[in-house]
Each structure stands twice: as C-alpha cells, then as structure tokens.
Length: 272
Image (tube, rainbow, N blue to C red):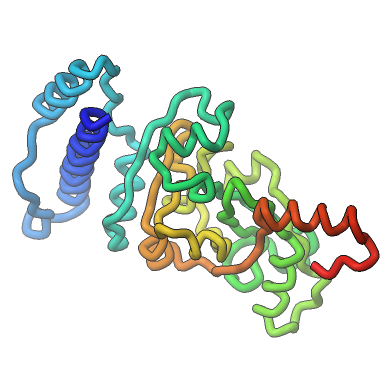
C-alpha cells in the first residue's frame, strides 16, 4: 500500500506539472510574448511518460493515458479563476456499475457522502418570458449539485426560488424537474455522467446543496467533463469560482430511513 500511495503522489505531481505546461502553452497562444506565462522548467513529455511508466511497471499496473483535451481545458479554467486545490482522476469503464463504497476507494474520497453529481433542472412552469439563463434569480434552467447518497428535494428548491424573488413571482411558477438528456447536453456540452459545473457551454446558475458545504473534510468529487473522468475540488474554492446558490435541498439516507420508520409507526402524527 505504501508503494501504491507513493505512486499516486508522484502521478499527481506529474499531472500537475503537465497541466501547468499546457496552461503556459495556451497562454502563449492567446497572448503576446511579453505577457506569456513564465513557469519553472518541467520535465519533457517523454521524460514524464518514461518515469510514470517505470513506476507503474514496478507495481504491475498499466500506464495512464495522457491528459485529455477536456482535462487540460477545465484545468486552465480552474486555475485562471484562482482554484489550486483540485485533481482529475480517470475511473474504470464499469465505474457506475460499482457500489458507492467501491467508487469511494477508486477516487480516494473520505466517505461515500463526498461523491456528488451535477443535475440540470428545468422550470417547467416558468413564465413564457423566461426562456434562458440570463436572470440567475429566475432562470429557466438550474444546475444542481447533490450527493449520490441524498435525495433531491424539489419542494425546497421551489420555496428557495420563490423567496429569492421576494415573492413577486407566484410560487406556482416554480416547478423544477429533471431536464431531458438532450437538453442537458445542449446546455452544458457534457453527456450523461460527465456533467460538471466548469466550462459549460451555457452559464447555467448553479445550486449547491448545503449538505456538501458541511462535509468534513471540505473536498468533494463530481463529474469531470467525460464519463470516465472525475473532478475532486476543495469546497471553499469551488464556491469562490462557481459562486453557486447554497441551498438545503436534499434528504440524507438516515433522515429518509427515519421518515419511513415514523410513517409506518404513526402516519397521522408525522411531523418531519
């Protein structure tokens, strides 16, 4: 295990250096030479690949693929917005067929509660004048980030948006439902199981479930722009970068179990 942990640390440093180099090259492409980003010398791609390959071979593991265009693009966006504590990680093709506990181990997450997903929601009852995402407070679409272990509470979202608009928009005009997959792809540019809040085609307002903010440690995982690519990020830096609405909009597993138990015992006296 110690050798594997050391390999992961070395790989993380290698990938970070590669990302820094790609960011430097992107900056030089779009800037004059006098404004080019100056970075410390890093190992060449061949040297990095060779080093990584030797380390992996010593452990009998396969060498990782090179950094994809999606990872490089999203890394550049994150760094340009001051985010420094993040990591991308490739997962097996059968990742979504595995248990939450297995996914946790693959990503090295602290708990299964740190595994999150991004869902595009559409306000099906929005006024006819609300057709896009120009108004954050009263948008046609919202991207909601919740834990896999939690259940989204659409009623809580409805109440929050109603209050956000100072009760000027009738509550019946808020009814958030899961957007069709093709709509999600059109708005974000990311397919199912790859959706992330970074680098979307459309600036969709983001709602972050308050339960994620309360996680300890404050570092969670979500989609990374490709089905087999996941993004881990420091919660505080995510909030500074994305500037989401923070809303208590889910019901956790334990709370749902308590709810079901109480309802079975005394359905008429349920106060939750």
